[in-house]
Length: 59
Image 1 (cartoon, rainbow, N blue to C red):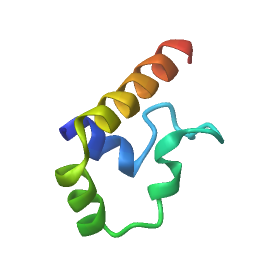
Image 2 (image 1 turned 90 degrees about the vertical axis):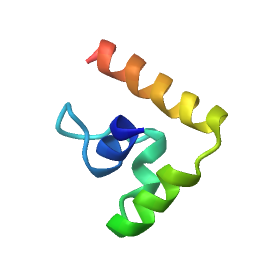
Image 3 (image 1 turned 45 degrees about the horizontal axis):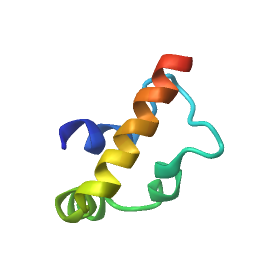
């Protein structure tokens, strides 16, 4: 889950795309981001990581 916590903070490519699913979490505090990562459902986690992987490959 460490990678998800990292991408909640910033995009490795420098700027998030407008449709990036974690963009809606930018306003959360560090504790709220940690809580989200700690409580995320497996399906949602896999979806976010899959999106991140595909986006990283295309950039």
